[in-house]
Image (cartoon, rainbow over all chains, first blue to last red; front, side):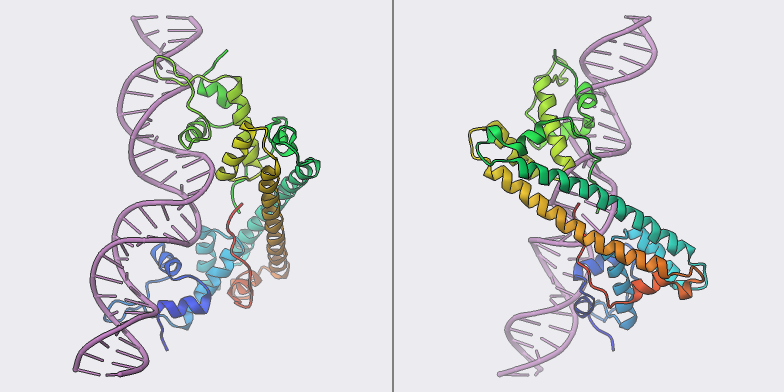
Length: 141
Length: 141
DNA sequence: TCTTGAACCTCTAGTCACTATAGGGACTAG
DNA sequence: CTAGTCCCTATAGTGACTAGAGGTTCAAGA
């Protein structure tokens, strides 16, 4: 009926230290313990952790997940908050794709133009040294 | 002829603490100092820092930049090393775009299907709770 | 019942590439 | 000479984990 942290890890594909970390930062409630202080989980823990994992895979940060979890715990609220969180994330992803596409184009150009001789004529190095380019800074996922 | 760290920052759009950080980790050589221990830079510093900045904007990590800088400093070598570094980066970027495109699709689906009523029927929350999905983990840039 | 060995525990520190803060010293324009 | 801006070092914090040390508990087999 109840099982260890290792078994929870196996069932959710979340690593053991990560589970403990989620508990520490309050994403997961502290579970009951055995007499020897080992954590014991049940099926509801599996569901909650799977929810968190899926949200992380979609790139939601911990604060967003905290908000989504509290919505899940209070199902009578309007879901416009969830909608907004997801929309913000979608916008981030789209921006990120756009900026990475620009990077890809520049990297491809660098590589195509490089005759691959001495570094002295290398387009890769030359392109980097040419300061007429402007991108944004690469930050998050 | 030579100028302060603040002026270097202005000319390269790299923040002052970041310049000091680059010096600390050995990307930039320690420059000469005034009697009062303030750093003085010249035009070659601008070029080198612009190179680094451009490489960072393309998402090369510090170790890759270290390698690219050493190639720039030894222009007689074959540029196949530079080529490989850039190719690896291109592959990373392409993988990243692919994975973000999948995320975008799922986020869009979640949002389209959400009628935006109570959380109880919210597709966003429901989708996250549904553990039949599998993505990779979002890690780097 | 005892023993072995895997799995568990806590705590601390490390990752990456910065960014922020504290507490001071140097430089420059008026 | 003074005001104000810039600069210095050193340390700690960011996000979301991951790794390691050093010790304890549990489950299965003998």
